[in-house]
Length: 200
Image (tube, rainbow, N blue to C red; front, side, top):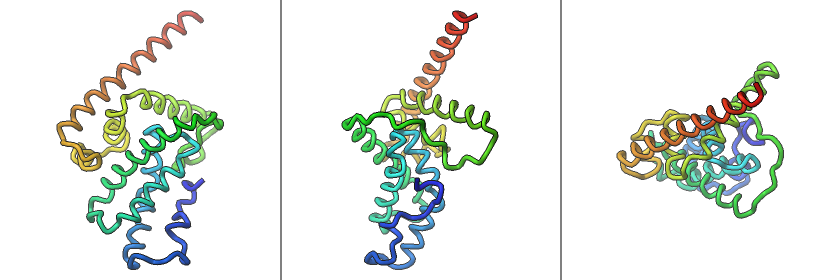
């Protein structure tokens, strides 16, 4: 798994690879990777990339960044990475649905997790899986806005830049995403109450 070690993939860090960019570009790419890998990995996971494809999708974001590094304006690196993550996640979901892969077991724990007690790990995993399930139910056009605003903390302006849409569109999609999320949570609560009544 790439995430725990947080090292550049060989294709980007191999000293034998032909150097196409000056050292400052390599340093900039390394800095981008070290500062944003965890957020990119979580973003592609939350955008519905299957667990078996998470590392490849996160790596693809940085491969794209390495190719377009000169075009990424200083100070707008995060917006570029998130916008790329949204597109890569969309491609990965489509590719996965075409292949119809069989489930490969439980979803890996978030790479940022430390070592809490086993019961806490189980509870965190259940909560994360529930959140991922609820987010996966959001419509495709609202999911990226909801994830970037509510879960990753980007501003509406940053999201508009990432997704290359007007700020009004971001606001509208966020409102619809929130409504859909709250409706899904309410349905989940109703279902749990009915199940509890049956057992009780």
